[in-house]
Amino acid sequence: MKTKKFVGILLTAAAAAALALSACAVTACGEDDPPPSPDPAPEIITSVWDGSTPSSAPSSYEVSGNDIVIRDAAAFAWFAAQSETDDFEGKKVTLAANIDLNGKEWSPVAPGARDGSSFDETSCPFKGSFDGAGLTISGLSITSAATEELGSAAADRALGLF
Image (tube, one colour):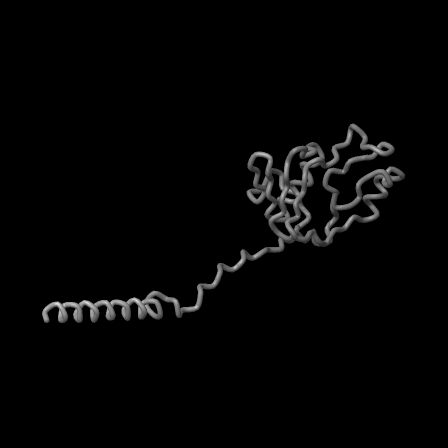
């Protein structure tokens, strides 16, 4: 008789434990709660250029080895200015913000001059890689003054963003 009573108590305890675990799975353990929302994607900013080029690299121009990250319009202007003497060979430049050049006069990145079908060896064409990361550069303006300054050589110059 004691064995039957012990087995009965044991079965009752097991059933109670199973119900407790079941209740935990439904409420306390959060299975009925909606799944947590994923972290929102980081907001992509649009940085508007004021038409000036910084005299030194801004903090938004990040260099790590051969990787360069451009985080705003000032950093992009700095990059363009550096391209007059650095061809960025072996370097990867990545855009991390939309850039609005704001209709301001723009000097092309790496304004290499062609000499027939190749670049003039005195110029500095861009030789790195540029990853726009799906972002935009807008508001580009190159006025006739830029082409007038070059005269007939304008056809042999880069007159765009790059």
